Image (cartoon, rainbow, N blue to C red; front, top):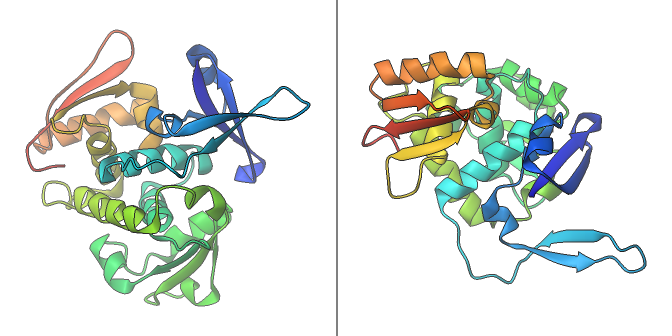
Length: 258
């Protein structure tokens, strides 16, 4: 059994449910909650109804890694954003989610947008606005102006971890997605490289993940994921990769790409 989060009404309604792994894979707009989150979940009986509610524990001293925070946020965005949202917009959404205030306010400086190679890319913010994931302030619609926005799902984004930990994870994601090995590539390739790094076993260069799920967090379907893996292989970012019989992807990253 796995814990699954689903969304309806364009992300305005969210539900958690326990289901089998096979059923979870067949549910539209659903993602499995990573074990790193479910390990901090405590069960609470709802009086008079016999149903189980779940809540995140806030009294645990455990501190998760920056890599884990990015992996969890990528999983969230795979469900929260429509499949049509571009890779550029997904990279911006990741930074926004990790850098927002406790009230969901986002202030994206010009320097950060320049580091992401998205300075003046108003269409990227408009995508997220049209997806009803955030609300843009009027000045954000003008090219070159610092961007101010408000996330419409801030309650979910700010439960855990704390703002400082999220900011550190945002910095790790920025450095990983724009390291010298991948910065010259398109946003689609940079996002896939970040997804691989976030899902690589900590302390090693190798990783394994279900191909469909890996593609989902990278904003790609399976037909789009495999060519991107080949691009990363040709660029020397990935030392090797293969699609195994059970539908998983195994890979080894080059040193210095995490």
